[in-house]
Image (cartoon, rainbow, N blue to C red; front, side, top):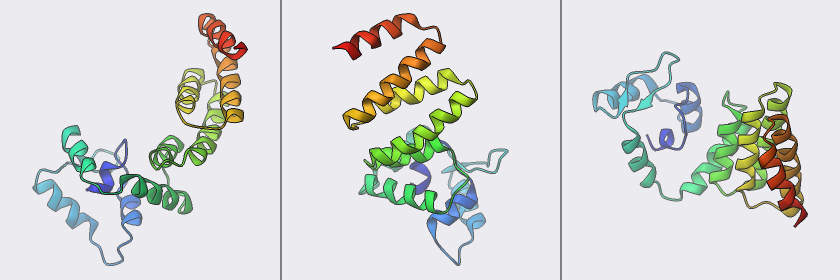
Length: 169
């Protein structure tokens, strides 16, 4: 259950099982028991178990010792196993582990993908998220330049002016 609380969104049972690394494990029995104890809701249509409430999820998360270390372990295992999980979630795991350069590299790929798909609002969201991370000056400038281009494509000229003034100071 602690493992499930580490993720922003519900994750697939197969990924959970891989992350738990148990060889003799009946995930169906465990999930049924958690459902009976009213910790999990019924499976969603896509087969992902869901914690019963956000309050419970936050409480379970708060009980985890060495939470940043756990996020790091999860992130590296997800990347090694090439788990079918979104790049934004993988990036989030690295970010919460304090591994900001790893998170940056993953989000950079996601930002490039968003540009190819002309998903500029999403691209802006990811660039702003990167700006909140403690990265080196070179990466911050690269992010700001990307944000400048994205804001221009979104016709957000007020933000473009503000960002250009910030870049000039």
